[in-house]
Image 1 (cartoon, rainbow, N blue to C red):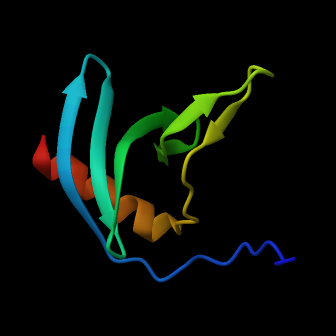
Image 2: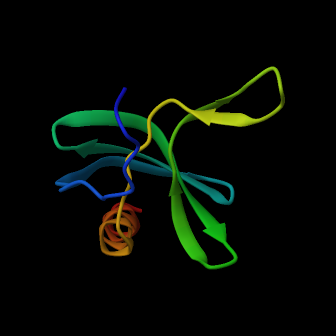
Length: 86
């Protein structure tokens, strides 16, 4: 069994599409060659963050389809790319 790690991975990210619908910004991003569709920029109490695609389970909790541990700098870079595309 693999140990869970909190280390951030080396990320090369490129936003390929961004679209704003009402107050929500959706975007697609290619991270290290893998395209992730349907990400969102969410305004939180501590600033904006990236929400990866998820689904609601039978227990009414949300579970991510994919998750990548990003540093604050990586998150800021992706959000900046999204803002440039809008």
